[in-house]
Image (cartoon, rainbow, N blue to C red; front, side, top):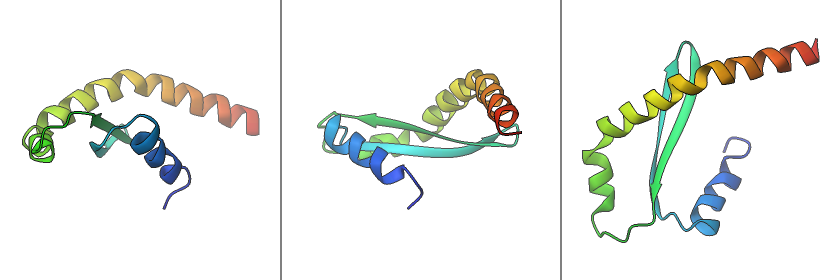
Length: 84
C-alpha cells in the first residue's frame, strides 16, 4: 500500500464512519489527482447507486480538481524552491 493510504482509509472507515465510498483517479494538466466521495447512508444498494452515478461524480471531481490545480502547482513550486 502507498504511504499514508492505509492511515487515510482507517480514518475514513473508523473515525468518520463513512462506510462506502469511491476514489476516482485522473490526470489533469499532467498531474495525477485522486478524489474521493463517501457516504454514511445506510441504503442497502448504495454501492450500485455510486456506480450508476459515476459519470456525475467524475464531473464534480474534475471541476473541483481544476479549481485546486493552481494551488497544487504553487505548492510544488514552493517545495522545489525550498529544496534547491
